Length: 294
Image (cartoon, one colour):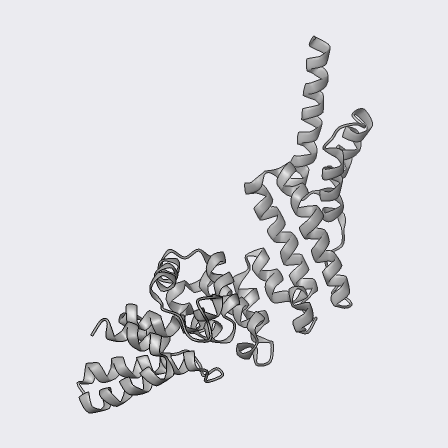
């Protein structure tokens, strides 16, 4: 019994030596400790996972990716092999920081790859977001031509700005994303889990009557920015900076809502009546939500 306890303790000790060296990002020490563990306990179930992490730590990280295919292979390896091994062997808290450096290395290696919509996940911006490097992510997006007209980069910029500056600074980008790609807006809302944004989203789903085109599905979220102004007029100054998009009906509705709130403050009743008519023509459901509060 004493011998069994000793062997078990030795097993645990050697495994801890490997894990400790991995956590400190010391590849030479980690490799030496892993070799001892493999020699003394060749059937140890942790050996394959530790080897995955050791290989990731030993791999050179400085070279730029030659193409999107090479970046995709490295990303998939990190997602499918390295991440599960890190969570298992290092624990969730330690693995998060360890993996962030791995994602950061991938982002740096992808810095010269241009944005391709069909290979968007291999761009430096989403890789930087995975690393938690918000400044690098927004800088990478800013280098994409016309990024505000492309759903994926617009979503990345919105996430990066939210993480770095908070919800108030992100409202213009959220409005533009809702108009341009409602499904991506919905996905980002779920990812951010901001309590204010989620509360408004729940109320929108419960109260908004739906448009003829949306029929209550996710595409109705294009109307969310306009609806928000019927629910929270105080957000007008945060939504005003939203840049012109495709001039769709939902965008026109939000612009009209901003005008209506301004005319109300100024007491310009004749113009107010005319703009209300315009809102009713562009977005009957938004008009109805607006008039309920008047």
